Length: 274
Image (cartoon, rainbow, N blue to C red; front, side, top):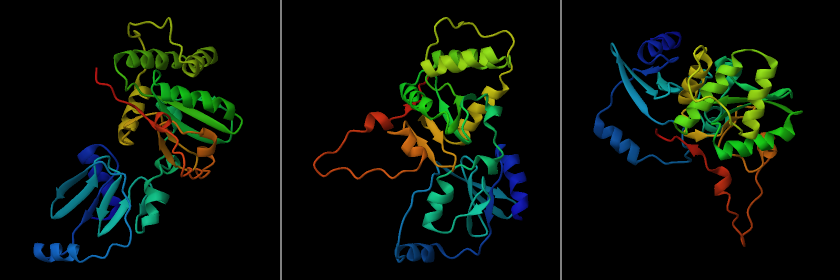
């Protein structure tokens, strides 16, 4: 199996993009255990992998992450989304902890995104319309509209009420009328959904919304807001200072005398089961 064959295999298995295979000589289990016990660890980094799948393809053994992003091939760990090898601990931050939308050929407008701002740099923000932490982000971003273009992607994770709001707003966007788009944007920024119908629209193209939900699952979102900066950095939860996070400014070291409580700022709105 060659690297170019990997996308076909994963597409067949998971409907995603690719996998990697390892077909190496198998040492005795006792040798493996002894080797692991004798390893000198120089550093350690968590990989953003929520699960691992083992797949057999003929004589090949394939290991892939559950979202299809990371895989082993020929003894190499690869980030399939960016087609880059991960070899060093620094690669985790530089590659694995970022999402390069351009390499993935993912367009926010295909996800039914609501546009706020007109700056050159684009920021992708996954939100639930009823999420209070999303409300904080949407309040903060309004002062940054000259610097950034924010693409707000709605995903209904807080139950049936959120689902109805998302469907109603997404269907209004389908009209392609400027006034309708402005109304949807204003409702989101103010989190004002009074007067929306409760019955599903009779005619509506829900494909962008469906793509948004699939993409959220692909990114393994545990909650919202979830932000992707222009340089690919990601943030789960509301940044304490949005402008500083987008500019990648280092956080000031907390005083030894005081430990500020930032939990409320960094907490995600997590999925609520209906």
